[in-house]
Image (cartoon, rainbow over all chains, first blue to last red):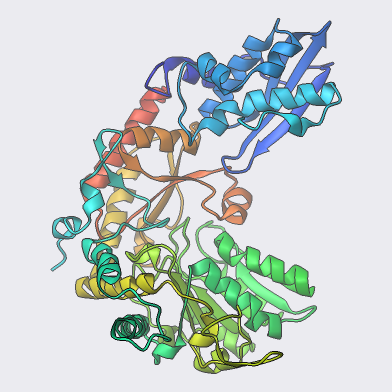
Length: 134
Length: 418
């Protein structure tokens, strides 16, 4: 784990985010907002045969939330919906390569939380059934 | 003689480290640090004369009651109130405002009446009035910010007062912009229109001399914890005649004189508004905090913060990519020790996190002033540093260094302004 939260990789993703912009024909999407930071995020997923074939995001926020959304949308491509369903804080920490600390954990997990909510809506489950740890 | 280095030695926390770096505390608008005298007063109370006030007939209960009342006398004198009975202790500014909303306003504001606040209020001076307006069907109006996005639009004041609000509730000093509002002038006008005036002094009393008689406000509220005292002790000052007429707030012990099965009679002020066991140690420690500030002299506190603010504005003006909010240096007489800023392209939470790694504590967020920060300044969040008696120029130098680190991490070129 890197000690510096603002490791090159997160800042690079923040400044040049991957998969940014609306995904036309998305099967699942969810918009979430964190009033504390003003982070505003929409996640789009294309799903086929139980697999995520494409993932995009739109929104504004801090480097940690945007960097996390950029990295997560990369990571999700090719994963099964089951795998997304099971992901938790540990997966986000591993993906980012940093321990964001309690004050910034919400920023780091916003993308995953939103992606899972999108998936739950798609699966006609209650979006609030997302894991409480996120 | 104001000696900041001597003052710093009175604050044990300033010798601590944060993330391995010497703590640079620049969030006094959120809460101030506490001098040894205040910390010791709390310890002394619990070690020597902890007892419930008013009811005890034994010696230490008398001592606790005497000290608690003595602290009210100190606070009354400190803010220029004529009687200590006009000082009600609450938990904080928020509770003081809610007390007024639930008592005086509940009785005096009816359907269709107007309540006037400003666009630079803290949520504590917004939400209780939204709640009251919804409850009563009253109308909540705002005095707008002028084009400078830093001070109130003066023409707007007259326009809003013409609606004859029952209450004008205004901040004395903005916790985001640092702007000091001429509440005396507004109170004078408001009274001509028959309004009562509440002044939120949470950001003024700790930092400048305040005289409620001179301001001629009807209610004045502030928190102890922003002026060196512990958390959980706050003040509501109101003119005696208002306090006498107001219905009680919470019911219980101490606020009554007699209780029958189906009725009760009220105690005298201030006890009428202090139901149940109070924050006695907090009140006593607030008195000690007042003594400490008086010894320094509030005019010296103000001058020190002015000088620090000018130094900060000067240093920040030399850096590109940093937007500073509030009034410019030439208006320093109308500006308190609060500097909100934004590093272009970097979210304030990222700024605050990087500052934290450097041992520098600043605030990032909407500062409990969403109508101002989000709607008027059009920012999802802002970074803010705020000063007090224990800050020095070296603290500001650390800020400048931390900004350079932020810019380096986010690869923002660090050219000097011509």
